[in-house]
Length: 312
Image 1 (cartoon, rainbow, N blue to C red):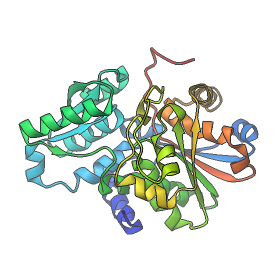
Image 2: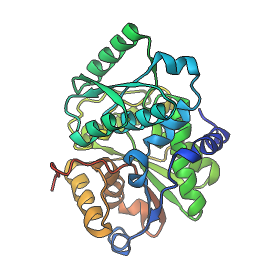
Image 3: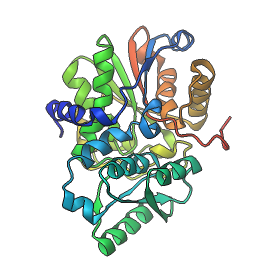
């Protein structure tokens, strides 16, 4: 489990390569939720998501020999693009295994940042099979999207910034998929402010983290039929124990609730967020009793949306 010192070291390491993203508020959404909401806008981050934090922290710690072998990962888009940028900054090359139903904007983002795409079926087994084949054939070095302590430490810098800017927060809500962002958020927030409550927000259509927490051991996704293309991954063996120990709850929401919240953010805040970001607001609106009258931080994880295929 990354320590808070690991997160502070990561922040110092990556600071020249990332944006310190703004925190926005909105009186209309405050009134609707009954809470004071503080939106950490990682949709304004480089390559359009928080993923550049963990990717950069990891790539900066790779040896020259590892870079020479080439880097490989599996990603639905945001991690892949971030990794490609971080590797390209060091003069290396990246292969990204991507599901064949990935939104075009995320495909373009990977290619624009110098990545080579290899397609797989949109299921975990296919992703892992293709990834292993590439590693066996090329000797490329894997940088996992979330199941890596260097990645987790990097992702934890978003919550660190949020609490540095707004130390009076009483709650934080983070999306959860593989668990890198949520576990990093927990490692930062619980150390910086021990009394704070941290919740994960997860699609009901890909609720492995919620069911894993309920059962006490990792459960596979029964479906990944969610509009949140960034939240379809399987909870990790490194991330799950952190979440299990530290999280105050995981809130699952429906597809309609996610789309509704996405539209609210677009209309009222005038910013572009992807469904995987909007899910944090969905969770608050669904469970208002947990947040009423509180100062609540929301991590808007990314803004890479296919503008030709909006859900509303």
